[in-house]
Length: 331
Image (cartoon, rainbow, N blue to C red; front, side, top):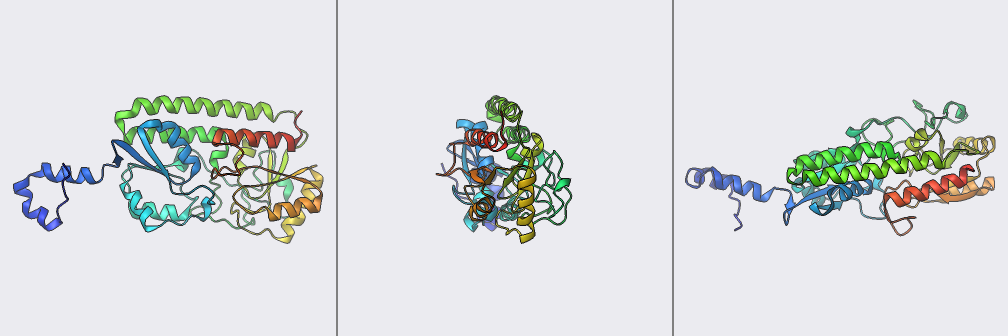
């Protein structure tokens, strides 16, 4: 039987007669975060949707705030989506990536929230200061600590790179955190969440090992890409990211930045300029044309769409590995 929630004044008058049991039942019936007995999980964008789906399995309903084909940095939350957040059993997001999501969560105040950024460490990555490209080092930081790189579109710490999912090791850490959050929000299915988390972490560990072995014996460490999404991946595998734009994929590079990339490409024997699936490839293709280099896709996996080279995170990461092997001249 559905119990219609009483207005506050009516509830106060009738509390003695109805008893606290009825009022408690009413409130839990409205806000239990479930549909048909399954936990409602809202993910802010694809990489967190993927984790929730793989760990939650058939025990949960998963929806994403960012629709396929939409650049997640640009997402604006509607009032209806904000209302949905308040009803969710668990919200999984990455603080600092999507400012509108951060604001909406603050307004909606969902009962259970999992911030992916809290499960691992965020670092500084970006484009380098023009003319200072020797300071990036093997770690691929691209000028760590640099105050002069292109603008950011992220809230909070302006230098914090949110693209942690592109490092399988950090992504596995986030998977463990999401698994724990699901256990807390839905203790009845804790055993399922533990089992699925273990299986996913094992798969991500294998992916990491394949990247390590697949990128050995390469002729170059440097790759050029549209925006600075691959700092964690570069750091993990000893590569050097040179981004046309900064952490914001929509920012326009300065003429000095383009000139610097010309020098880097020649000095480091770069043969490929990578572009992405969700943002314009115009600048990347212009740069490649000027330098007589080939182009290819290196996908930051911020969403899965028709142009994605794979149906899920694992498949697209393996496609990225093949693209890097070809660009870096692995033997």
